Amino acid sequence: MSRQVFLYDPPDRFVAGTVGLPGRRTFFLQAVAGGRVTSVALEKTQVAALAERMDELLDEVVRRSGGNTAVPAVAPTEVTDTAPLDTPVDEEFRVGTMALAWDGEEQRMIVEAQALVELDADSEEDLAEAEERLLQDEENGPPMLRVRLTGPQARAFAKRALDVVNAGRPPCPLCSLPLDPEGHVCPRQNGYRRGA
Image 1 (tube, rainbow, N blue to C red):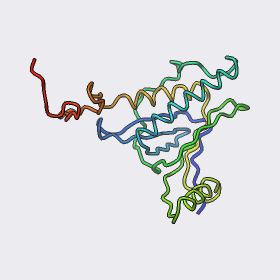
Image 2 (cartoon, rainbow, N blue to C red; image 1 turned 90 degrees about the vertical axis):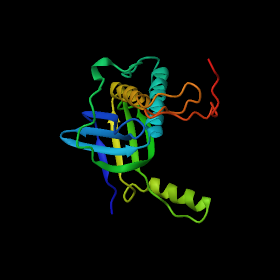
Image 3 (cartoon, rainbow, N blue to C red; image 1 turned 90 degrees about the horizontal axis):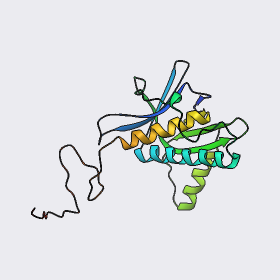
Image 4 (cartoon, helix red, strand yellow; image 1 turned 30 degrees about the horizontal axis):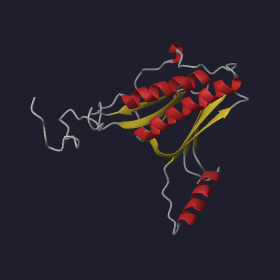
C-alpha cells in the first residue's frame, strides 16, 4: 500500500487545538485548505515541543539572516488565529514522529507529522534499523501530514500552540502537579497541615 501524504502548501489555516475538558483534552494539529480539512491527534508534550522548536528554528533564521528575512520576531496580530478547530474533528492518525525544517530558498517552514507505527524487533539494533528503513521509505511508509508555512504563519502557529498547552489545569503552587476541579492530593503536604 502506498504512503498517504496530506500535503498543504500553503495551508489556509494550520493550528493546534483541543477537544474535551482540561485534564481530559485530546490535542490535534489541523490543516485546512480549499475545503480540505486534515486533523491528526498527538500528545500535549508533542504540541509543546513542536511549538518550542519551531520558535527556536525561526529565531535562528532571523539571527543568521541578520534580520533580513520575512520571518517576524514575534507573531503578527493580523495572522493570529483564536478560532476553535473546524468541525467535525475526524482523526486521520495519531502522530508518532515529527520533523521540522527550514527551506531557505522558498523561505518556508516545513512541518511533518508521521503516523505512529509499532515495530517488532528482537534487539535494539534491529529496532533502530527498522525505524531507519521506515523513515526512509517514501513510497510505502506510514501516513504523513506535511505542511509548508510562511514565517508569519509559523510564528502564529507556535504562539497559539503554546497558548493551547498552557490553557489547561493550573499547577499546584507546592508540587507543580495539575490541580483538578474536584480537588488535589498534594504529595508535598504529605497529609500534614500546619495550623494558622
